Image (cartoon, rainbow, N blue to C red; front, side, top):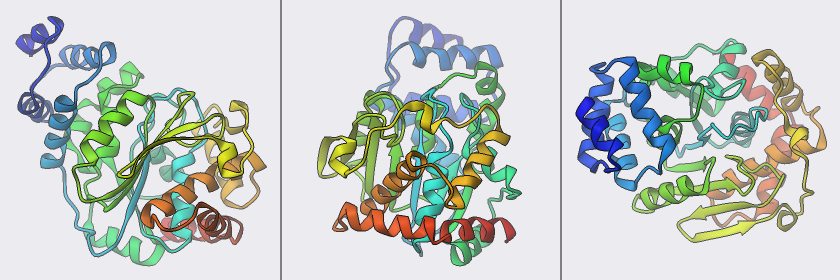
Length: 329
């Protein structure tokens, strides 16, 4: 690792094959925590390249515990995290709303690193038991329209660096990788990024693949549609800036989507919203995200139609029933 670090400290870049090998070695726990922290820090101080991100991704996908859910037309709805905005669990709530419409969701997630509550924290607080058993995950999709893939159950490399990431409590390149390495390789992706550069990197990588995708970057730094500002949207059809007003929505304040100061706070907010009792701002944020997810699965579906479907799922309590069913299985 010393030679690698010296190379990086000299402002050199890694090739795709070098990046892949290093991450395979990380997964094998060949490096100590100080070296790992130094390695992660490099990519906080300068932009990661397409080759580096692609190499890291190839390593994780090669090493992961794979599950075959190709019988289902699934979507993953996930953000990088690391935006430092401390919102409630927007992508997780969005996933349940989408599942409540009848679409199949294969949600990839992890514990929080830089905020109060990640998707895994939330699911665990509701009593969900993480699994990488394909039979069980298929049953969850069949009966609840959603399954949850807890990253450490599938990615040895992520597990190997978990203590270092937790100790740093900062966004690292692993935040960038998470949305790209769903072990079930879904055909549809709605990905959020905490900065525009990463959104562009994702677009470079995903446009070469036979999938439907939408990449979102809030212009004020959110890794999801926050309605606090406009957002950049990338897909195979190009890129555009979309403002809340373009969607018939009001702009909201950051404080209106605050996620609380603990997992307990976040769980209370989550339950309130999924029971159809959220504030107008909270509801409109999750419904707008859900509408975009539905439009990614079916690009011919107008936003207004998708928004109405999402609204029926939330206020018809189908999203709530989906959560209850998943936790009870």
